[in-house]
Every structure is written in structure tokens, then in C-alpha cells.
Amino acid sequence: MSNASLATKASPPASDISEPQPMRKRRGVNREGLEAGKRSTRTILWILLAVAMVLYGFPFLYLLFTSFKTPIDTIAVPPTILPREWTLENYTNALGRSGVLASFINSIQTAVISTVLSLVLAVPAAYGITRYKTPSGQVFIMAALVTRMVPPVAIGIPLASMMSSVGLADTPIALSIAHTTISLPLSIWLMSSFFESVPRDLEEAATVDGCSRLGALWRVVIPVVSGGIAVTAIFAFLASWNEFLFALLMTAIRSQTTPVVIANFQTQFGLDWGSMTALAAVYSIPVILLTLLLQRKIVAGMTLGAVKG
Amino acid sequence: MRISDRRFALYLMTPAALFLAVFVAYPLFRLVADSFFKISPIAGGPRDFVGFQNYVTAFTSEAFTSAGWRTLAYTLVVVTLEFALGLGMALLFTTLGKKSQIWRTVFLYPLMIAPIVAGLLWKFLMIDNFGLIGTLLHQAGILSDPNQIGWLSDPNIVLFSVAIPDIWLTTSFMCLVLFAGLQNIPGDLIEAARLDGARAPALLFRIILPLLRPVIAVALVVRGIDAARAFDTILIQTNGGPQSASETMSLLIYRTMIRFGDPGLASAMGTIYLLAMLAIAFVAVATIWRPGKDN
Image 1 (cartoon, rainbow over the protein chains, first blue to last red):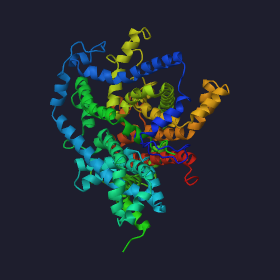
Image 2 (cartoon, helix red, strand yellow; image 1 turned 120 degrees about the vertical axis):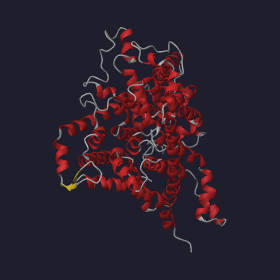
Image 3 (spheres, rainbow over the protein chains, first blue to last red; image 1 turned 90 degrees about the horizontal axis):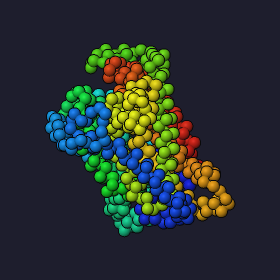
Image 4 (cartoon, chains in turn blue, yellow; image 1 turned 90 degrees about the vertical axis):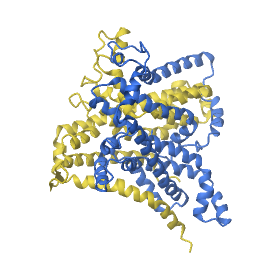
């Protein structure tokens, strides 16, 4: 998901997917086009969709149901779909374990620091790239693209040893820097697309009025792209929140994030499936709700770049 | 004095460029440098220059070459299935039109789930004995025994089983991108083809897919890069087993580094892996993106 960023300049008709309104217009165009007309066809298609949605949604529902089973029923043979007895035992077990609540705080801390860092670095860089089409800017955006191809496992170990040599081993700062190596290239790509859609006259008018270039960026352009900044922030946050490999390599007891704790349940405490499902549910639900609330923005961010004209 | 635009742009880019240089380029340099040394896993241990010895070891090791093939197979399986399913869903949402919008949103939900959670969840569904999938197939009369298919324990099929969470997680992304592409196809084009008597398959293969080509290509490259780096979902499901049958490149490098304590060899493997990824991605991007041709 994280990489809607490979923007193509070769796509057909230009469309500004960043704006929610034109969607309606385009759908209107398509109504006569691909939309199914016959009532019977539509009924069959709706049934197909219902089947697909049930199949697609079921795995997570099963995780939720399981988290409300008793720890013994969790691994009963044969398994049942619904709990025979609804209980919060798995939740109290999971959240009561030492380090679990701390890991939530670590996850939040790491994701917030990484998001802020990504934005602070990406917003000016993307502006520099899109507004002043200098050769260095073009080289830079290609370099950022290449960074996206680097397998995390390749830089994880050197990065970890760098952090410990400057005394940052096992801290949320070190991990959030590592996460920023993932989210920064993505943020630069997203922000570049958003800046592209801002008319240049805006800053020109501001500079004529005596604003400095930095002043124009800060007071005129940034407010215009604030929606884009929000989208970028969501992606940077999610990238860090869900990241596992760097967290595994770079954290020990003090700064462990929840994904590592979830994975550790497998070995450290034997196989406690009940607690694992409960913790996984608690960790995933906030971000799923976030998607539903902010779906328009998220859709815009994900499609940007990939289908940009 | 007012600085030139060019310099101003450079200043704006400098912090991000420095960050990437220090935290991506330098670690990469360290990785390449380490690949020429025999390194003791103990901190401060001996470090001997061995030239290309680690590369020779990597290329002659069975584990390395099979991990390479497995990574390729895994990537192809993931990307092909995701594309087929994603396109199907995108067409379904398009043909249903506006009324399906809410379901389109719901369909996105796996994208927000951590890969580690997805891997865990599917492991729980596919695991021997108390896995639900085997049980349901047994109850439906398809399998004679719930454990007839060892999803995660049969070396012959495990590479496909471990790919399922990845497919489940990101088919939504494929669908979303293709859906957006479909919205850009002019309606009158479809109308004209229909009037000419084109039926659904012809419409799909002659008109829709060719028009979507750039979008499809980008989506495939983006997902291909990600699938080739898959780590979390496989680690949590099988840890590369049984008998290394699901050990892809990321896992092999990780294990060489951590478990077998050979940072030099792991660095050589990492370097080869990185170069291979860059080469493949560049060929793909160059054919799609064609920088400079437009603008």
C-alpha cells in the first residue's frame, strides 16, 4: 500500500484525484459507460459483491470472535466460529502482561516522532522539487524512488549498530529515525503530487505583495495543501505503526513496540493464542476506525501518483 | 541579498537529502563494505578482509540459490493473484456504480492491518488441528480429514500458503488503483464499442485493459517490489520452515545475520539481493515511466 508513490507521468487522461469533488463528475460520465444497466445483471453482481465481502471480511471477524472465547476454547478441536461463552479473559490476560501497555506507549511515541520528522523533512523538499524544476531536484526525486527499493533487512543491521554507537540503542528516537527512512521517500512523492496541483500564481501574487519565498510557502502554499499534508501524515503514521522488522532489530526491552510484543507471544510465553488475538484486535481496531473515518483522504492519497496524469 | 531560485530550491531539499544520505546511503555503504570481510558476530571481534570470498560462498550455497527462486515464485504468485482479484473487484465496483461506494470503503480495511497481525491471523486459520479452514472444508465434505492439507506444514505447498495473508492485505490496494484507473476511461468510448456490438470479453481485453496499461504496470511494479521484500508475514507463520520451504531472501539474510552469526556473508547476500531488485525495478520503471519523453 505504502507505495502509491511511483508516480507515472505516462498515464492517460489527467485527473485530479486529490480533489474529492470531481469524483462525482467522473462517475457521472461512466454511468452510461461501464455501469451495468439491466436489473437482473445488477442483482447477480450485488450477490457476487456480498459473497466477496463476506469472504474478505471473515478472517478479521474470526479474529475478533476468537478474542472473546475462553483461553481453552481458543484452541479447541474442532474450532467453533462463535465463542461458546463470551468473555474478556483474553483481553485481561493480554493487557495484564508486563510490557504490553508500555509497548503501546512506545508504538504511539515512535509513530508520532516519525510522522513529524517525515513531514518536517518532506514538505520543504517536495516544494523545492516541484516549484523549481532544477536538475538537482530531478536527481533527488529519482534517488528517493531508489530508496524505496532497498530491502529493510539490508540496512537494518548497519543502522542498528550506528544507533548504538551514538548511544541511541533501544530508544523510540532510534526506531522512529529508522521508520522515517521508509516513510520519507513516500512522503516526498505524495507531497510533490499535492504541490503540483497548486497553481503557481498563488505564490507569485504573494511575492508581488512583498512576501519572501519562504513566507509565501509558509503563509500561502502550506494552508492550501493542508489536506495533502494530512494524507501524508496518515501514511507516515501507519507505516511506523505497522512496521515490524526494524522494530525487531533495533529494540529490546525498553522501546519495544506492540508488533514485536505480539510476535514474542509465540515464543516467550509458549503459544498463547487467546492473548495474541486479543492484543492484535486492540492494536488493529483504532487504525481500522481511522480508515473508515478518513476514507476519502486515504483513497486520494493511495491513488495519487499511481493514476496521476 | 536575494539568493537565486536554484540555490533556494537546493536549501529546501538539503535536510531531507542529508537525512537519506546518513540513514540510508551510509548504511548501504556499510553493507557493501562488510560484504568483503569475515566478521565475528561478537562486538569488537576480529574482522578480516576476504575479498570476494563471501560472494563465492553465497552463490555456491544451495540455500541462497533456492531462496532466490522461492522469492521469485512468491512474488509472481502474490502479484498475479492480487492483480486478478483486484481487477475483478474493481470491475465489480465500477459496474455497480455509486451505490457500492460504502462497500468500497469497507473493502479497504485490511490495508490498515499490520502485516504481523495478518500473518498471525492466517496462521491461526490454517494451522493444523485447530485451524478453521481445514475444519470447515472437512465439514463441507471436501476433505476427509481436517488435517488432510497441511497448509503450513507441507513443504510442497507452504510457499503458497504463506502468500495468502500478503494477498489478502493488498488486493485492496490493487483494486483501489485499478478502480481509479477505470474511472478515467471515457464513457462514450465504452458506448461506442457497445454500439459496434462488442461483448463483455472483447470490451475487457480490447478496450479496458489496453487503456489501463500504464496504471496496471505501475501497480504491478509497486506491488512486486513489496512482495519481493516480504518478511513479517512469513516469519510469523513459518519462520521459513518446514525444511526451509518458505525461506525467502529476506528471511535467509535475517537468519544468516542473527541466527548463524555471519554478518559478512549476510551482507554479501544483501548486496546481491539489492542489486537484483534495483536491476529488475529499473528495467520495469524505465519501460513504464520513460522519464523525459513527456513532461
